[in-house]
Image (tube, rainbow, N blue to C red; front, side, top):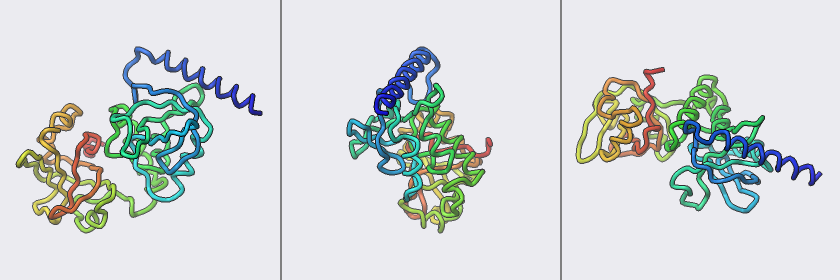
Length: 260
């Protein structure tokens, strides 16, 4: 049995190498910079697991709810399998875990594990996903899971909050939240751009973007100065600063919902 297992892993490794060679020179894909191929061990929680060599890996680009369901879903997908890791800057998190887009080999193709977790409602797309192709994949998967009310989306506490419902937003302060609503105005003051969803800060969501990050958003097709009147879906951690506020550091935190 052990010999058969080793042979199976070797065959999968060869397949991974063929995929990597076939993709060399192709258009940039999700997580373009390869770290390597490893054997996965047990899941630690819903978005991290241990490699057989003892190092810990965190799946980039997702946020998971507390509880055991997400951990079990990740365990089912990864334990004992070969995984391909593609770098997510800065390369590690504050706990020293490798931060990466993680792929499993299935039917001769790379399967993005985070996308599978999101598509089944075990996770939400995070605030910082990195690669545009990864962001597109995760946000699309989340949209489908949300419409079908899969997993966490069947729980009312995870429903998208209205940008004009200060009470609901402030009840979620300190937690990762998704909010949506039409933008009333966009203002700039003291090096910060403020996207206002209402006339009174204490009653409506405000999204802040540092002026130095404006080009980053514009390059991703989201010009902060041109968002007035648009319906936005925003993700991040709610803070209380005279009212509910979300700081947006990355373009993937803002979706233009009226395009849908």
